[in-house]
Image (cartoon, rainbow, N blue to C red; front, side, top):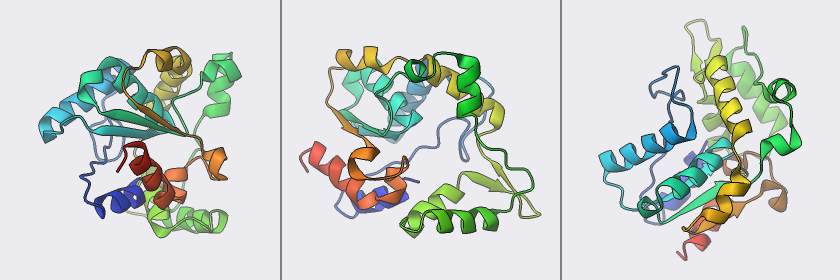
Length: 213
């Protein structure tokens, strides 16, 4: 879903790396390691493997919490972090009971749903999204031989991540950051939660302005 933003940044000469974190996309899918300590260590290992020297790390929604923790735990490894409609609020403040939160936040069930049906639904409900956003959203699913889909991120692992997210306290982390942070709230731009997919040119421009490029 970052493809549109990546294309904008790459066209202006910036190296861009999009990450399928553990459990997502075509990355490995272990049953453990979805805590922030492990997730940020994964990113440091990736930076080492790709020889990335102090990149700006951007994440959306839960990814905003991940990059926030990356900047907090490994400040010497990043030039800054960008939290895109995520990473700034304590979820438990809005939903103090985990049992209630687990129901409210649970992902939808995709039983016997076809990829073309999801694509048609997204184009109907998000008419202002560019094609890069639609195809990016569809890439969240593995397509079976019969055309039905299954999320790459399984429901069990998704719920594990949500529990970690619910327990996270970004309001305590933010004041301790020593690296620059860019915060983008989608509502400030009359945008969907997935503002990076909906308005990639805007998000790319905000990132470039944040780094003075």
